[in-house]
Length: 271
Image (cartoon, one colour):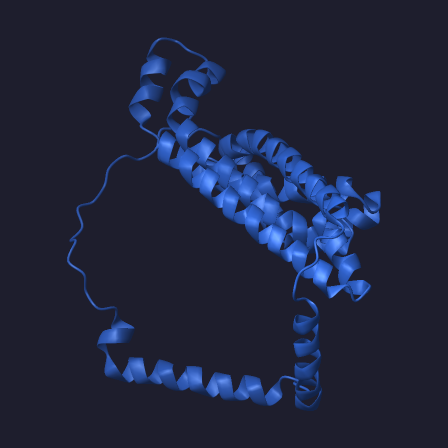
């Protein structure tokens, strides 16, 4: 293990205007560039204004047909939501467990350079693509259903949790690591007794946040065939069953609100 540089230069805490704010030429020059870009973008992008104007009444009919929401097929809604919940929980458990070794590999202060590069590469690849794109690839690989959703959100969790845990490891108190090494402890013992206890509160908080995020993402990836409530929602829109579709949206919103409250309460208890 390489010891990080703990020396810190003293810096002034007085806030100063950045050059592009303090300098009027740069400030107005940047404003002019933004205005020119906006004009160029709106002039060159292929907006079909006629179709947009025709779509507004169609959107009004969709919203009008969605009210009042219909919960008559609550059993179908409950089945889709239960599947989404199972996908989110399994993906979070697998993603968090797999993110720990990759976070250790991607922490520069406790991993040699070759291992560090491999760990960072895995995390970067995991974070490079939107879950919908990954879900399309897994649906093509393993077929429609919850397995594609679990694999997608597991990869998504590794990228997010692994990156933040690696940064947390790089900021640990190095004195505890030195104390363990002074007693002759090995690498794994040092990780277990000196590193992991310092990042445990952060890891629990990240796990709760990732579960909350996976609940939302499970509805999105289900739209492309990766199981869960998203598939039920897509089928409802495909049948022009807008009142049932809006009932599904209300349930998704309610579940996310409850999840936000629970995760916030847990994070408050552990910090």
